Image 1 (cartoon, one colour):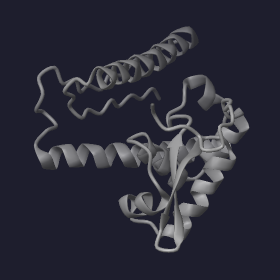
Image 2: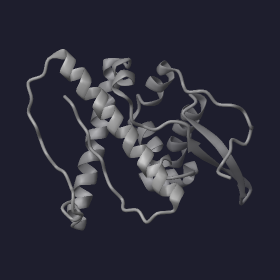
Image 3: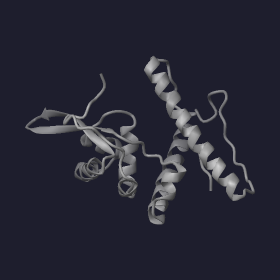
Length: 188
């Protein structure tokens, strides 16, 4: 059995305004991205992100209050209690969710995602894995689109992310050998 909320409460999807609040700070986006790799504590997250523990703990509490993560375990450590969280939602947004956010939040998210993409590309280039696996796809396509095509391509990108996440879960559930991959999508 996987992690379960320690309070046993049923969870519902966060309201779009709560998602906007949660994702309006780059550190909260980074915390959600880190939690996608598994249950973690603010102390571990602070170390991975290179941020002070009090700052990470503050933002973890905000994410929990907004329903984006949940407390799944507590462990006594040297007179203190370490809290462990898991995500209730992913850090990426569908085109529809993104369109409901204020422009300032969309701009913050875009900056955070572009920074993370640049970091991932640089790490892959440094490791010599950018062109490693066969079947790698890298392209830049300039288009002239009407509103219908714009919306259709946005929906197709959302579908591709869902397919990728579904295939990831299936591989993990099957205990298959996996390779770390990055899927970068943009429509602007």
